Image (cartoon, rainbow, N blue to C red; front, side, top):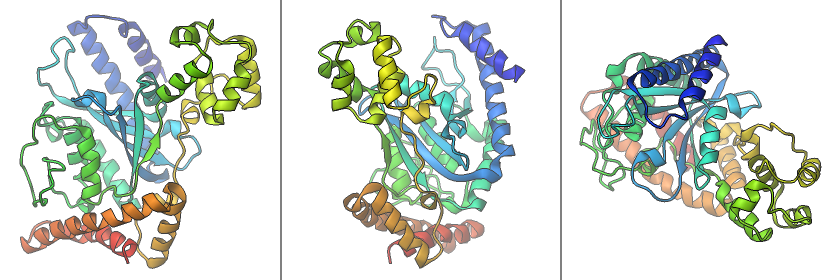
Length: 387
């Protein structure tokens, strides 16, 4: 607890600094590393409670480099609070005054509640979630490899915007799992056949959105995405409904007397909770009435305000029977709707083809005997779903 408090104090002191000195950078790296150690320890202690894995991608629909998208892997536990779920990402350990200098890559082990405010502040971003079906063995292997990568910098290599960025590192980390066939397809989503042990350098300008496409293409995350809408949609609409602007909303002076009636007519319960969370300076009378009507409490968890709900737990598991597959299809129709789910099922044929192709390479070349056996788990999963 003392370490956490110290880290938070250091962050609060440094966050306002316009120029990061060598000493300050050292303190930032130390504080971030201590927080990561604490979160990793929490994950290790609670690994038996992990029931699912997700890939998260904040996307604004534009931009070029990955700083606009920072991809994450989320470990979902079995309690009712998604805020304490552990998420991992990869960043360069560098001085921001020299952004184009390559530095050692670091693994950041965070939790969801600390990451979500970053997403909220980038209010033009949507947060896309991709389910990665796994079993207990794969999840434990992933956590074990996470510990190895966290302590061994050589496994990560030096960070490079073009050749070893957050997306490539995350993709290659997933490929430490033998069941994921352990190939390195670093030229992602180019449309060509995947090649066993592919070490082709990634093309310039790789976006993390390509990573999401590749996870689908290679059968790692082939379900439709779960999308959390950005706060911008609510803000633009709110300005129009209340005939005001962002300055008026933030200052509290742009809220008309009948704001409650106007807001309730045009916004859902979840959207109203987001408004209450975002605009702390709205008139007290309006805030109190909206809070009472929509059971909103000051200090509400941000994951609740954003509508961060877990999908049915069965979707996070690998199928090993026809009964399981039937259940997955029913849940898929319920969660995404029959049109979206049917379209995605057709795309799973591509994932199955690629998995079988890569598996054949492993068997023919006499390599990765264990991987070939474990990869069959994923092949069987899609065979059941596509029957």
